[in-house]
Image 1: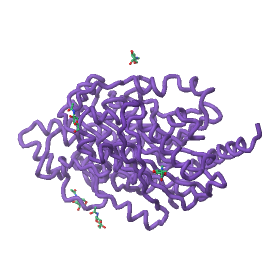
Image 2: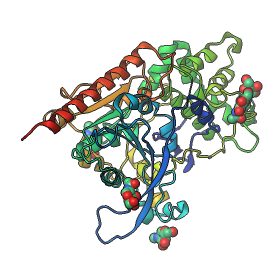
Image 3: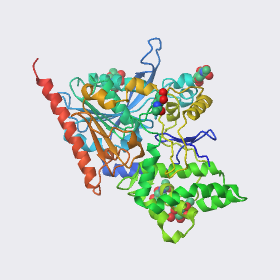
Length: 495
Ligand SMILES: *[C@@H]1O[C@H](CO)[C@@H](O)[C@H](O)[C@H]1NC(C)=O
Ligand SMILES: *[C@@H]1O[C@H](CO)[C@@H](O)[C@H](O)[C@H]1NC(C)=O
Ligand SMILES: *[C@@H]1O[C@H](CO)[C@@H](O)[C@H](O)[C@H]1NC(C)=O
Ligand SMILES: *[C@@H]1O[C@H](CO)[C@@H](O)[C@H](O)[C@H]1NC(C)=O
Ligand SMILES: *[C@@H]1O[C@H](CO)[C@@H](O)[C@H](O)[C@H]1NC(C)=O
């Protein structure tokens, strides 16, 4: 069986069929949940941004969206701080909704909150906001890069501070996932614009060959195996059974029935991709409380999946067991009548990541050794390169990120050079294997939570939060307080 998938932060696509298969998402009910909390409030602004920061011949601009909340701000007279979220590969409102931490700590710090949308996502689309033009080809997409995005953030923050006459207000940047990588890199590249960065679940070491390409799936394997050995074995064994069944006459129809797949479309590859997506994203969002980041999920969804698999009621029927697990990821609300393998909806606007993955974001993650819960496979750069050539006509630059931002020997490099970065990682998160897991210096610190998942620290708190999560957030608040005290102290020093 050959199952080859390229896993990006939030988008899967299969180079075999060359069909992009993004995760299927149910309409989000998150907005309702949060407005009842009454804390999520912001105004929407647009800033005229330069399209090409690095070429003086190009006069084009675009409208960049940013969200602002000044309810808690102590004002420019007090040099009150500005907390900026460095937006990632999707609609900024979605990340804002999932970053309650900033809203919850803003009153304590009297901070202004700013959430900046990444270019080419959400409503921050160049070429007059026309997505079909902006995404047409490599000429227009060429302006979608991390370096341009960081320059956008610097330009916008400096302009905003001027407008607010808040020149001396310290800026702290926050981000999760790719947004966390951007936050860390922003601190390293623009130390005159930000005093510190909280980089949550930022796999900045998933480039070149710094991190093993088996790390990602090894962690997923451990997540399920740690829950129950039987759960791991059933999932591991299911791929071959699906493959064998698909080969038999009428096999696909049997699979359709077992997995409640809609009538419109089924193939072995699409079914496997659909299951793979469920396991990967459930591991990533294995939060200790009910959540709705990618899909609505119960608390500890990996445990729930394994419960479904271990359920004696499903007897020895592997497909029934695996269906039960998938049903937790795809049908927790209980509303699905059937599962549509051809549903390519993209409610959070994540499609631009495919371009980024084909240019600079070459993150080897899809190796599977023989212990893996997924079928064995090797990370194959050439496969990625072929795919990118075919759909965009570009050749990736796998060494650009480590050239531009570093990564090799990070301890040695940053020990005496950098400062004021928190790297948070939850070890249940498959991306954590490529995060910074050890303190680099007194002020570049790693916070590692054994039971944590993908940027869980940035989420809204809840009464049910476990103690370790409360402690992580307390520690982050303390560290940020220290950065600010040191900043104010140096502001008052007379030279
Ligand atoms: C790329 O797309 C733009 C905008 O749609 C178009 O003007 C241009 O001709 C295209 N370039 C190529 C090389 O196809
Ligand atoms: C700053 O003010 C100018 C003039 O009103 C405005 O055009 C610009 O968008 C503002 N900058 C930001 C970041 O909002
Ligand atoms: C690491 O990557 C470099 C360049 O991409 C390559 O030359 C080298 O052989 C790789 N090392 C290993 C151990 O794979
Ligand atoms: C979704 O869950 C509901 C409630 O448990 C169930 O009745 C329904 O059959 C499920 N849908 C699918 C497609 O399995
Ligand atoms: C699912 O069903 C619940 C009631 O069981 C309803 O409140 C909710 O809006 C439905 N969600 C979707 C996405 O249709």
